[in-house]
Image (cartoon, rainbow, N blue to C red; front, side):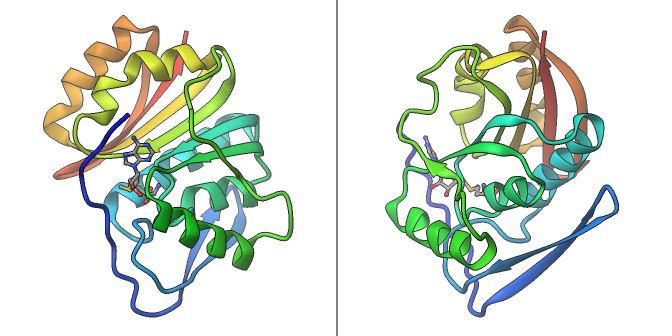
Length: 194
Ligand SMILES: C[S@@+](CC[C@H](N)C(=O)[O-])C[C@H]1O[C@@H](n2cnc3c(N)ncnc32)[C@H](O)[C@@H]1O
């Protein structure tokens, strides 16, 4: 699973983000740093998609945040009471910053870092992945295999022009299109495993 893209988002100061999900007001504190994941559109569209899935099915267990960056999506899932959250990140610096952000936001039961996200079949009820380049289109089969039937996949981090290609590959891998969130050039898509 090599990826040679550089993911940096400068946060020169500590910051806080607020979200309203299902009438809950959630605050996420981010320590200053450079790992990706605060208010880029790809992150915000992943959050919109999480909000949509949460409002449909509520919190579930066995969730994967693949490409966790600053840890923002893992923290959000945790604050929404999802259980057994697994984070996966191939940049050690981002893992360090995530751990600091976990400490600043969560009391206990931190999301658990794993190295092999696709080790188990039929395991996750929710996967969220915001990674650019070829990673998502090249791993649709892995996403699908590791999801439980009825489980949701949220992908973000790519341009609108890839929408048809990604929906096409996903359909061939038992992933039904549910909804997309779009604002040129970015898009996030929700799929459900059938
Ligand atoms: C666009 S950032 C997303 C960060 C955060 N989840 C968000 O939504 O803002 C992508 C992250 O995925 C990580 N990444 C890229 N390829 C990866 C791979 N194959 N396995 C695990 N992490 C990966 C990068 O280091 C980066 O931190």
